[in-house]
Image (cartoon, rainbow, N blue to C red):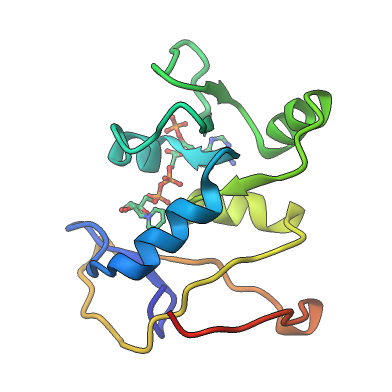
Length: 141
Ligand SMILES: NC(=O)c1ccc[n+]([C@@H]2O[C@H](COP(=O)([O-])OP(=O)(O)OC[C@H]3O[C@@H](n4cnc5c(N)ncnc54)[C@H](OP(=O)(O)O)[C@@H]3O)[C@@H](O)[C@H]2O)c1
């Protein structure tokens, strides 16, 4: 996200940061991922056999070519628990981060030291209460 917590606008994500992309790929490798239907569609072709995407959607009558559809964050967590999965990584977008944040116990954030111009289709990371969170580590990419 940028300094205004911008995630994307109607043109998509406004930055291309190879080191952050590599960090994202490395952190998510082999994991169960929770993605909103829109982000899942945008990331089509990105997943590999190590990923298990859970696609958050209110319509359950379709089947993604990889992973499965979930109707809620608690459903995704219950599936992860039943499969003894140690972590489910929420990968956005904005609506999905907002739905997942109340259940999250760790945030892995890339904060970009820049403000990007955004159009009316802008979406933002949800607000969080810093007093409820502890910084465990920080690094520059
Ligand atoms: N900068 C970043 O790191 C980053 C990361 C990820 C995504 N993005 C950007 O974020 C944008 C998409 O974000 P978005 O917020 O518009 O969409 P999104 O969260 O990717 O997907 C929204 C869809 O997810 C489903 N959904 C969301 N919350 C739900 C809930 N509580 N229960 C059931 N279904 C739910 C709905 O699907 P149905 O309509 O099927 O019900 C909804 O239309 C894209 O532009 C993408 O590029 C940026």
